[in-house]
Image (cartoon, rainbow, N blue to C red):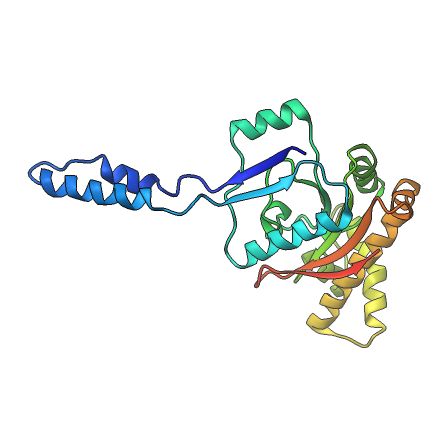
Amino acid sequence: MVERKKVLGGVLAGALLLGSFTLAGCGSEAQKTGENSGEKAASAPAVQVYQRPEIIKNPDEALNLLKDGNARFAGEKVLPDNLGDERREELKKNGQHPFAIIVSCSDSRVPPEIIFDQALGDLFVIRVAGNVIDPVATGSVEYAAEHLGTPLIVVMGHEKCGAVTAAVKGGEVPGSIGSIIEKIKPSVEKAKATGLAGDQLVEKSTELNVEASMVELEKSPIIKELVEQGKLKIVGAKYHLGSGQVEWLETK
């Protein structure tokens, strides 16, 4: 199986550059510094490499990759992404094989590729305010699941979601924003029935809205069949803005 590598590059660049400089009037000292830098470079540990199979068909394997990537992100240990011309040419030649479909909110604080520490060709992302599902979003998910063979769908809401907050507050909204709010309202009403209010109501509504989007996706005959065959899994998640951690809510 082809292995794709995401390499920590350039960690020795500073040390190597120091070794190549000679300062006027301080030649011997600068040369000495360069020699010391060369010695440090020679003794540096092996370069860390991130590897994953190019083709992933197992939903649990895909989910574990996302969990590992989010742990790196939340722990501030992300690996430099492979965004160079070699990877671009590889994707151009061989096509895309994303291992996870992410349905998430359009909020600028919630970019899936960064949150899960992934790069080009890794994720098939559908973003819409409130992570709501309509026929266009469903069709996009179906394409990745059926045509590309992606084995995992993640519906991800997030803390302090503006769309959910607007649905909780009620009132009129301008333009087509109302169509988003209407999708979220049933989850808000369900959350209100629990007796919650304020921020707790918003967060509960967010979680129920994720669940509602998962249910909506399950109505697709294509998605339903793949799930029943064990080729596809749908997982709910919630991103926490402060900690950077993804909370896993439900699996279907």
